[in-house]
Length: 470
Image 1 (cartoon, rainbow, N blue to C red):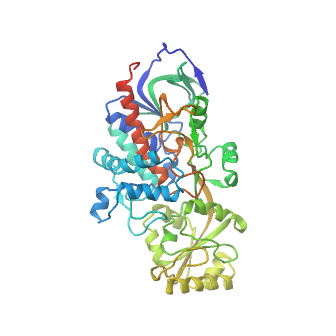
Image 2: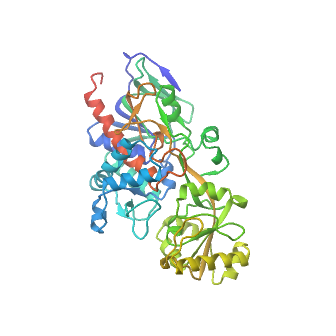
Image 3: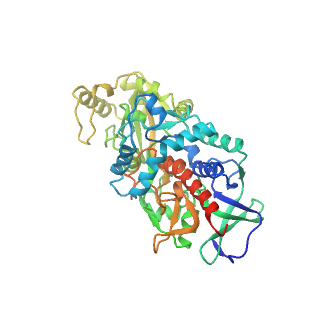
């Protein structure tokens, strides 16, 4: 895990900035360090860099962007920071929250202008907790497309990404300064690479059953819909170096993973008027509260799965999401002209289902708030033909990790001062979602990956320019 070495020893080869992990966080950090004039190497265990980002919708929140201005959306750093803190019950580090909100627009615009990432504003609906439309995505609205754009940017910048290598050890001197890493190849051979600054961008611990059971016991039997490489390496390395950690019980769940197809179904279906019913044909929650905490609620239902029920209006809007189109092509989406037919297709009790949807219709017509706290309006009215998808709750990624400051520097546990040359972002670092599953504001994961990844890369580059030992 950690190998101690002499501070006088220098490894060959050596790079200025070494990045572990080639997901959105690692690639954003690498581009930022490269833009700052430093030589960079990215290490990735997979043959093809994807990370958890490729499994997401690829939405990145940002405040005050030109895409918002073009659509007449008024947003601000204060509003975005307040939204994040309101959702996480003011449990996140306000300094980090503020830094992410302040830099979000500039980071996205620089990625677009300098590196050709084709961001656009997501319009038509608000995710729970966001005061205004501030989600940005690439045209197909998939994390896979976002990863493709970032990889293309790295290729154009001639950035080196070394794949199929698993970092096994950090090489650290007597002053806790990272001198380099020891990595292993698929054939069992070992290599050592030196660095002057190290960025941990290898995400959280969602793929490690032991750590999930320890910190997220209610998710230990849930589907893990994240990258299998999320094994908690950054957490273990940091702890071995005496780094502080925070919010290890925080995660992003999702209450709408198509089952058994395991395709992400956008929560836009719920925000545009859809409802979830369990096997008894009844609603059981406020679907507008948040999709992260909804994972636990869905898993508590009979059979640990439920049905998303919606109509043709929502179906047509959902077709703008490639994940939804894939689910539709895989026959995960059921359609019916009548409620009787829908009940047969879903094997839900027709009487209970009809009663549930009649009640929803009344709530919409009368602009009422239901017993769960969800407010309905006429624009959310559902009417046939009907559509349904069976879904389950899933763990997407963890949100706790190493404590960092506003620039992505990893902090010590004893005095909260930065470790000499260690930086982190994305799932490797403590996020801004508070201590549990209910504090996750949509987009927090990629906000920490793309924006904090960029800040960590910049900080690492700055460190190598000013550090006298470099």
